[in-house]
Image 1: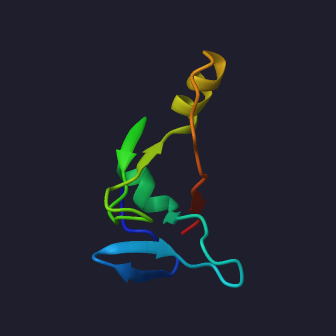
Image 2: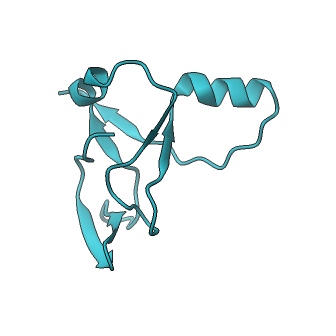
Length: 84
């Protein structure tokens, strides 16, 4: 994935968190044009280490809906795609 566009802050040992005041941890935001340049995908990694010492997986809405329809459990947090 491209770099996130909303504010991030350095936590410890290279791990970042998304900071969306006043609520603290928030959703990663991406620019629509940068995501479109990637082409169609179902699974991708974040560029940053967000909230832990590993890249997080980003899944497409198509992949998510397939899991829901087939009773495959997922623990997800939404991301936002902002217009350019």
